[in-house]
Amino acid sequence: MAKKALITGVTGQDGAYLSEFLLNKGYEVHGIKRRSSLFNTDRVDHLFDGHHDKSRHNFHLHFGDMTDSMNLTRLISDIRPDEIYNLAAQSHVHVSFETPEYTANADALGTLRILEAVKFLGLESKTRIYQASTSELYGKVQEIPQNEKTPFYPRSPYAVAKMYAYWITVNYREAYNIFACNGILFNHESPIRGETFVTRKITRAVSKIALNLQDCVYLGNLNAKRDWGHAKDYVKMMWLILQYKEPKDWVIATGQTTMVRDFVKLAFLYCGIELEFKGQGVDEIGVISSIDYQKALNLNIDLSHLKIGQVVVKIDPRYFRPTEVDLLLGDPSKAQNELGWKREFSLPDLVDDMMQSDLKLMKRDQFLQNNGYKIMRYYE
Ligand code: NAP
Ligand code: G4F
Image (cartoon, rainbow, N blue to C red; front, side, top):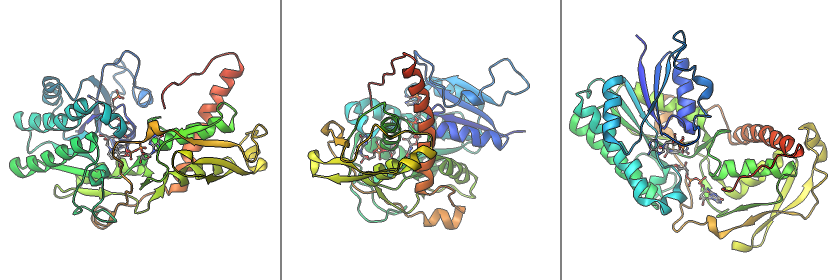
């Protein structure tokens, strides 16, 4: 019998990669998606064969919401999963300052709803639970690097909600003997990362600037440092955490940290554009200092519209947060030693993968624009 996995947040970045990973392992995968007025299944469409082809039906989508306990309990009762991956969340830190109550409901109480459903249905000894915890818990960091024992100091409504989720997971493990684990994952990105997270915002904007579809990108705090890995490497760890001999909490990170400013430089450099930063605070600008036309031509990009000295990065204080997390750097030693954590993607690999994919997407936009279609994206 194939193992059954239930993934909340299946339509998100991690949900999509994890579904693919588990299907390749022979799992029957059930995903919960929210009802939306537009299709929101772009990231998993390639896995879905429709309801009617019975020969390939290992991937199932169900409507649901983390704020609806009856719905979650009914789905868990019907599916009786061997493993639940609780990935659903209002996951944007900045947005959580604007929607704190909703964030707490979905991210904190949503986790409780899953745990309580498993207990209520008597599935404590059958169903293993992975909770998507986060390096945001460390917030105003109490030590560098951060490991499983580093005290938490959350700095946003999102992180505070995730702190409740972390501890309620530990509590249900200790109180009811549920195999429930926290993966404390540091930032992980990919070509299907949400467009408003900083890495994807940068790779999309740099692609547009290189293709003459945009002049400049507006960013917030360039000094923030993040420990960035590739989501493909990280979903494998979610699975390994649930296969381990006992339930534990794990830090998954690369052990390297990079400034947002340096990520911007790497993304431009991919296209042959070198940047230097001048000025300070809200007046800081990113200016083109050299252009390698040949490198760009090898990528089929014509950079003749760009000039040395041109400003392509500016600061917009709108993107500053009321409280910021300045530095994240994880120590993944425990996962390396006990789970065999090893990653395939370095930071330059990640930048290459994202840039390659966004250049392809933006070339499609360029084609449409050249043929009279207006391409608009209001939110960044
Ligand atoms: P993501 O791309 O933002 O995906 C979040 C998923 O949750 C989406 O499928 C979203 O549905 C769904 N969702 C949001 N609110 C929901 C609700 N009320 N009911 C049901 N589903 C809901 O996030 P991700 O990057 O894949 O991250 C996955 C999880 O890991 C999240 O819990 C995040 O907080 C956590 N995490 C992420 C990182 C990272 O660097 N990526 C690091 C540490 C922890 P829609 O598609 O309809 O919006
Ligand atoms: O890409 P970000 O929005 O990610 P953030 O806040 O680190 O959160 C992500 O990683 C967490 C793991 O640590 C997850 F739990 C969470 O769900 C999410 O996936 O911002 C990264 C940094 C911040 O310091 C931000 O202030 O980039 C800075 N930044 C600078 N300019 C910007 C921008 N962030 C965004 N989103 N947009 C900007 O224009």
